[in-house]
Length: 160
Image (cartoon, rainbow, N blue to C red; front, top):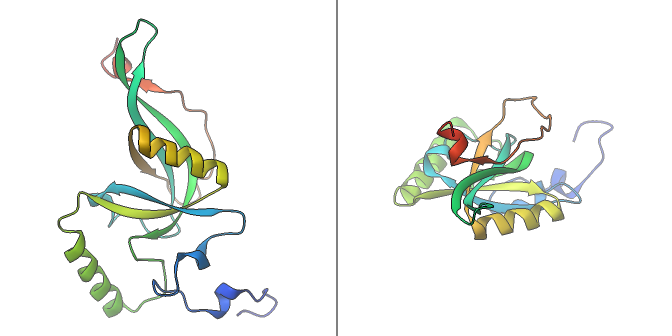
């Protein structure tokens, strides 16, 4: 623990899958697990920030359904990717852990990431998972700005 830093439980306990995810959850937040495309698992790392989107069937004013996508959460901290909590591992340890996870994930369509969300965001995320297909957008380091993003519908994509 660096001199002058506050002593916390997470600073005293080693970070590992065995010690649990709760040690990484910031005060006032909750950990939520979200399924992502398996191909994204190797690209997203603990400590990254993502936006969460939902694609769903929207009921239009004329009564027809149209595919729509909405950004529901922005600048969300990734706590873990699979069992990788961002704990310090040597290169051989990381390789062994990655290979073991690759074997178990080989037959899965989805990978799991754990996100730090506030209680309201947790409700939005739970609703989104039940009502549509969720996906993420990875942010560049340092990009923390929130932007108003209007809902997109298929008609706009096709130029209508």
